[in-house]
Length: 151
Image (cartoon, rainbow, N blue to C red; front, side, top):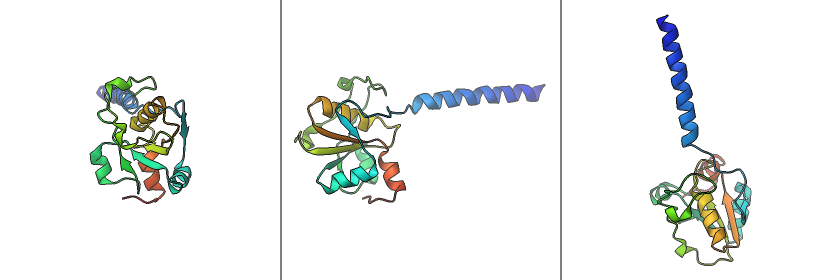
């Protein structure tokens, strides 16, 4: 009887941890926000070759560890708003001073589909009138897995 009780407790605890983990690692939307184009690694390479600016929206410390070769650091930090498509950008900080040309091509990225920083940056940029915003949803982990240039 004691073993059944332990098994039940373990099972219920596991369910709780899975549910909590899902809530903590909520995925970004699969589609790009309005006014933004969703891109994959090949398109990022093509855009960069044509002069697009790659923007690493992760924390400055993460950028310093490693980033996509040629990217600049424009951290979406602090990110205090909800990890939700209807987030309140006024709760966050995103300094677009380094990216003043609203007609240039920009590719924003962070740490994959569970990282909201690049999604939010793309939304903020599109709403601010940037015309050529591209969102690389898969970000750094995908780039590394493809063994593409890092620095």
